[in-house]
Length: 87
Image (cartoon, rainbow, N blue to C red; front, top):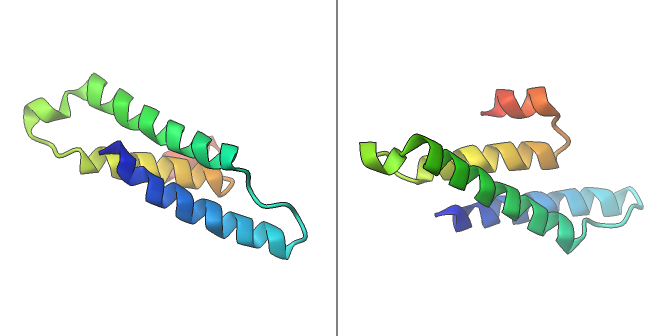
């Protein structure tokens, strides 16, 4: 389920907000959390549709792991190369 990505996004947002507060910066906004969740859902959906994982018997948790890795890496400041390496 793509909703499993919410935990990774929330934990990353909590960590980033704590770091930002310690630096005297404002915490992340709920908008940032929702963007991360939406991106994770999009990644799961596109991978599922384009690869027909369910037809070959691959569980959807693989998609969740890929989406979480990509989204949390980007949230932590990773660029394109870092996100690709995380996958």
